[in-house]
Structure formats: structure tokens, C-alpha cells
Amino acid sequence: MREVKIKELEHLRAAADESGPARLLGMSLIELKEGYAKARMRVSEDHLNFFGLTHGAILYGLADHVNSAAANSLGRRAVMTQSSTYFLANPKVGQEIFAEGRVTKSGRKLSLLEVCVSDGKEAVFCRFIASCYFLDEEPK
Amino acid sequence: MREVKIKELEHLRAAADESGPARLLGMSLIELKEGYAKARMRVSEDHLNFFGLTHGAILYGLADHVNSAAANSLGRRAVMTQSSTYFLANPKVGQEIFAEGRVTKSGRKLSLLEVCVSDGKEAVFCRFIASCYFLDEEPK
Amino acid sequence: MREVKIKELEHLRAAADESGPARLLGMSLIELKEGYAKARMRVSEDHLNFFGLTHGAILYGLADHVNSAAANSLGRRAVMTQSSTYFLANPKVGQEIFAEGRVTKSGRKLSLLEVCVSDGKEAVFCRFIASCYFLDEEPK
Amino acid sequence: MREVKIKELEHLRAAADESGPARLLGMSLIELKEGYAKARMRVSEDHLNFFGLTHGAILYGLADHVNSAAANSLGRRAVMTQSSTYFLANPKVGQEIFAEGRVTKSGRKLSLLEVCVSDGKEAVFCRFIASCYFLDEEPK
Figure: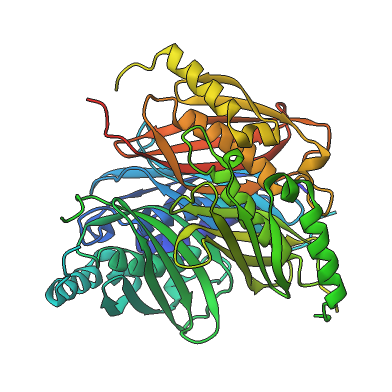
């Protein structure tokens, strides 16, 4: 596989953070390297469901932000085809939360990504695993 | 199980549509009855990822909007504990998309929800299945 | 896509039912056509876990028997890459159980399969969804 | 939570390995402690599907053997309600394979289990995550 240039990763990071969903939800990447990404957001009133709990789709959004950045950090275009998400605990309004994700397997056409959403310390809110599919051919 | 009153469903529907995530993403319930919900949204530029494709988390958000409304339509408080999502196709900017979901199993403490996100006709964008957990005791 | 010949389906069905896992668990296909398969087995003492409940892997085995037959019924070689399984109820020893599965989406390289394991009437034991990957190129 | 006695774990291990599915597939636990289990099996001709590949349900069976032992190692009765499985590579006939699983979260009624099926070294064949449900009340 060809080398991924730092400049490409910087470009990817900027493009991801400038996308509509990232701005709508207030998500930003704080680290991005080949096969790895980390992002953060702060839970706000706008992220709560009708129970006053942080909405599952918000935790999912942060997990997916990391997932798509990490999946595309290998120098190939990847799209998610499947995800499994486990909701374990719920963060509070005002809390800063983090998602950290890795490519744990990368094949010819498919890759596996594993993400953890947490408070950056011990409290895990969500576990997320995804299959991604490479749109391009494998580089020679 | 006790009867769910129409008024409760109206209250649930309003609360769901007034929640922050529903307003941020532009989602609204167009039908809600016991064990069933349907919602719609229109895909906008704000919903695109850095590829210009509708972001997975947006399709997930609409699926989950229907999921949480349907899961809570039985007169018991339910929270999602797990979801599996399959991304099959991608809607275009400007397109109106729909999610339709049903409680396909409801037990003492757990329920199963199945959701389909589509263009309301033949094109299916996303399949979503979730396990929900009832926070309260089963009504006598 | 080219036409799948009846003879190929008969060959596939025989090969699937003669495989080791099918014989070990006592599974047999009772219907196979393009994009659809149905199989049965009878729950025996050998299928119980240490609680005396039918083991999850047994229900999974029957679901996957149908999944792999249906996935390969389109005239292309398909392998499962991911599955999500929901266990809803447990069949008893001596009970005949059925799995019925369909290809609900078939693309260039990936397909989606949905399977239901039941008593053939109303009782659903397990819901199973799988992503499959076509090993060959799409036929012209 | 009350202490789990060594004797209980020994009893659980024996019961799991003597169950029908463990004997049918040739699976045995090689380690079991609170919240952790490891098992092995050898791939045989009987484990192949009609392609000559190790059947997904066989890898799933080994993952689930470890899953149910670990889930029940906390001194409470647990049943699996959902699993997500990712198939990454395929072991060969004659190869010894291992599954290693941990309870990564244990709550009042639900727990999360994560399992890896591998050659015991670097080759990972399958990743498996499951939600389990405690049948009993939480010990005081």
C-alpha cells in the first residue's frame, strides 16, 4: 500500500470537521493518523431526546465521525456499509465526550473499524464496530 | 398491558419532534400509533459528509427518531441498548426520505424494533434493527 | 445477471445439506430458489447448553444454513462477512424449527440477507441479518 | 456483587464442556475466571461448508462457547440476547483455533461481552460482540 502523506491527512481532517454534520453537532477531530482518529464534542441541550437523555444518534454521530476519518486515513476512499452500536451509559449536558477509533483490519475491499465513545477516562458510553468498503481498487 | 391513550401518543409525538436532535436535523413524525412510527426529513447540504454523500449518521438519526418514538409508544419507557445498521444506498440533496419502524417483539424487559429508511417508494437506503430496554416494571 | 439454472440450485442444495455442519446439527433445506431458502431441523438433547436451553449457536447454525444457501442461489459465489442476531425465544427439545431467508438487496459486490427462525407458525425464536460479499466479478 | 467461588467456576466449566454443542463441535474451555474465558477447538472436515471453507457457524459456535462461559462466570445466570459477528479470515482444516472473551461491561440487568477468535497468535478469524441479559435479580 502506498504511503499516506501528512498533507492528505490534514486535508481529510479539515474536510471532515467542515462537513455539515460535524458543524451541526459540534464535533471536531483532535487527532488523525493512518488507521486512527480521535474526536470530541460537548453535550448540549440540543443533543437530548424527549427523556432528557443524550440521544443515541448523537453518540452515534461522534462514533461515526471518527469512523469515517479513520477509515479514509489509509489513502483509499472508504464508505461504511454496516455498524453495530452498543449503548452502555449516558453522558450529561455540559460534559465533554470523546470518540477514539482504529482500523483493526484492512483487506482488499473491506475494512473493520472499532470505536469507543467515552469521557476520555473510565466511563464508556458507547461501543461501535463498523464494516467499511473501499470504493477504489487497491493501490498496486 | 394497559391501553395507551391517544393523548399520550400525541404528547410523545410532540415531545419527540421538539427535541434538539429532531430540530437540528429537520426530522418530523408523520404517524405514530402503538408499536409503529413513521417520520420524514429532507436531505440538505448540511447532511453531507466530506465526500458529498449523505452522512451515515443522518440516516441513522432518522431511523433512531422512529425507533425511539415506536419503542415508547407502548405506554412504557424504553431506551435503546443496541442497534445494527446496514447502509444500502445513498439519497441525494433535496430528496425527501422516510423512516418507518415497528416493534416486532415486546417482552417483559426487552423489545425488538425494525426500521426501514427509504424514499417512500422502492429505494431502500438503510435497514436498522434495535434492542430496547424497558426502564419501568411491566404494568400489571 | 445471468439466469440461474435449476440444476445449479439442485447441486447447491445437495452440497449444502451434505456439508459437515448440516449433518452434525441435522439441518436440511426444504426449499431453495433464486434469492430464497428455507430449512428445518429438530431440536435434540445435543443442542442444549448447560442451562438446558437450546444453544444460541444452534439457532445461529440453522439461520446461517439458509443464509449461505440463499446468498449463493444467485449464480455467484458469496461469503458472509457480518451477521447480527437477535434471540427472542427458545424452542424446546423435540420441537421442529424452521429458518426462512431472503436476499433483500444484491449489489455489485455486497448483498443483504434477512432470516427468521421460527416454529413455522407464530413463534419467532431468532432474527438474523447478514452482509455477504461476492467473491467473483459480476457477470456481464 | 457477591464473590464467585472457584468451585462454582469449575462446575460451570465442566457443564459447558459436557454440553451437546461442545461435544459435537469439539470445543473445550482452557481457562475460566470471573469475567473471562478462553476455549479451543481443532478445525476438521466436518466443519467445512460446501465451498471447503470453515463454516461461519463453527467460528460462531466457538465464540459463543466462550461468551456463555464468561457471561455466566459472575455468579449470575446470563443469556445472550444479541450478537454481532465479523468474519475476517478463514482457518484451515487441521488448524487449532482459540476464542478469548471478556465481560467488558456488567450492569444491573445487561452485560456486554467481547470475543476474538484467532490462531492464538496474530491471525484473527472473527470478532464477536454480544449483549447478555441476567435472568436473576442483582445480588445485594
